[in-house]
Image (cartoon, rainbow, N blue to C red):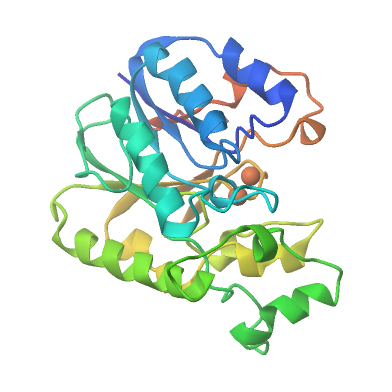
Length: 277
Ligand SMILES: [Fe+2]
Ligand SMILES: [Fe+2]
C-alpha cells in the first residue's frame, strides 16, 4: 500500500478530463487529490466518481479554483465557506477524506504517519519584506499580475480572503497541537507552506496568492516528514530542514509538452521514493 498524490487536475479542460478518465487503477494505494480539481461541483464529482473505485482511499483538499463562483451564477449558488462545506459533503458521500475529518494514521509502506489534509488559503504575506501585505496586490499589479481570485473567490461569511485564511490557520494549528505527537506527519495543503518554495520564474509577483507566512515553520513544529502541495503548476521536490516538500501539479494542457500519460504525474509520497542518482 503506497501513498500517492496529484493536484491541479483542472478537469474543466477537456484534455485533462480525458486524462483523468484514463488514469490507471491502483486499488491497493491511497491517492491524495491536492486541490484545483476544477471550478464546479460537477468537476469535483466527476473526479471523485472516476477515481474512488480505482484506489483504496482518496484524500481531498480544496484549491482556490473549487471556490470560484461564476459571475453569471444564480444568486443561490453556494459561496465561500458554504461552497467549501458543500464539497466536503460530496466527499463524505463517497467516503473521501477531507480536512474536516479526523486525521487517519497511515499504516502502509513507509511506516506509521499521520495523514493531515488541510485547507489554509493565503493572506498576501508572500511578498518582499519592504512591501506591506495590504499593498501586495498593487505590487503585483505593477507587473500586470492580477489573480482571478480577486473577482471569483468570495470569502463569505468572512470579510476577506485573509480573514478566512487566518481562521483556517488558527483552527488547524489548534488541531495539530493535539494531533498524535509521537507520529511523523504528512501535511497536505493546496498552497505552499513556505514563501521560499514559491518558485514561479515566469510570474514571480503571483506570490501574494500562494500562501501565508504563518506556516513557515509548521514542517518542524508538527514533525512533518513530507509536505504535499500544488497550486504553482511547477512540479518539484525540495528538501528544507531535512523535510521533503513535493509539488505535485498536473496543470493546464498548455503547460505539458512532454506527452507523458497522467500516470507519470502521480507522485509517490510514501514510502519515500529511492533517490535517483
Ligand atoms: Fe491550479
Ligand atoms: Fe491553485
